[in-house]
Length: 139
Figure 1 (spheres, rainbow, N blue to C red):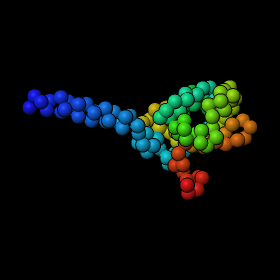
Figure 2: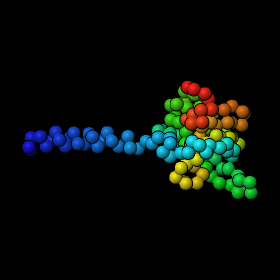
Figure 3: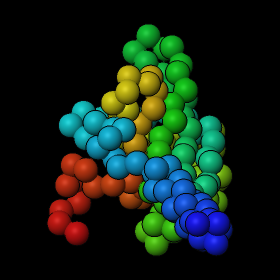
Figure 4: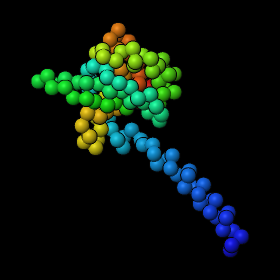
């Protein structure tokens, strides 16, 4: 039994290491409500350009003029780059008014959503999230 112990330990450790990345990622439907997507306009305040998802931040005014800070999850950096969206486009538009189509968090977390599209001040619209509403047709 002692001869097999190192092999068993290595195999067990390999299994544990393999499980960690799988548990860190989530499916869209687990965290966000694709039936309640809305258009949100506000001031772009920041970008976290990282994997597995990038996040952008906006300050949004409600009907009474109260400002709340929002965070929106996007696709992976690689997927956005394939669609023509670069980090510099976010940086160039910080402080400017942008619009997003986004689905809210299911958890009840306030001011958090998954963005589908991002419209920049010059009118260009970029796909930055999943096609949960099938707005872009079959892909």
